[in-house]
Length: 249
Figure 1 (spheres, one colour):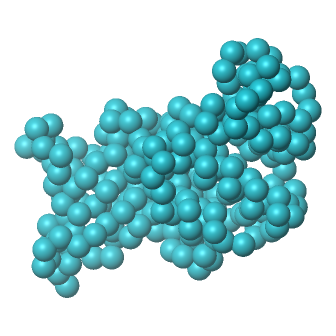
Figure 2: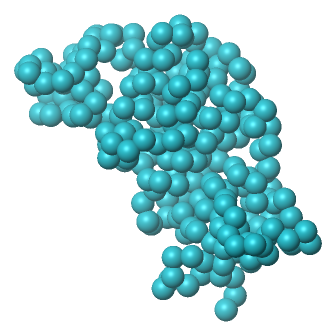
């Protein structure tokens, strides 16, 4: 049986037994795959230091559809991305993106999701520190949307009525803004006009990354994103990397 070749990003690795590793990969052609890298912990392993988290390259996998754990024959990295580990906030955003793909990707391949992840990780290596807050928020929101959970911002999340411009009531539970009628008696918080516009621009990739957010405003947007993910993707369970990123100043 010949191995299947596919572009892949290392999402997570952990030791298996004395000499091997289990590798979780986002692949462009096969979706998220779990594979064993036999002998990866040995000094003379062909994998060496190639299987670093967030590295991207070409994976050779022996695929059997009857099993969940595949065999990794080779991984040839084209991008290592070690620089992401030099900044805790930068790395937390990168790990949050990897966590979303690892935990919430559908079973079938999603080339667009894979490409977006690779692009976001590339941009994280070069974005200016002062632009990191806005870029991080946008990158994670766009990935949430790519996974199929875009919040309603122009029409009521309950009855589909158009919600006029300006401030609006936003319900995490309902999945977006609510019209005045639907907001009555429901748990929804007022989303100021400037924050509604910012959220729209983050999702659509049009946010000005040079925008300076106050500490309070940045924290509020991170908190909203975390609550939305917990409600709609993780069924109330804590997404660890995203929660850590949210806790950072």
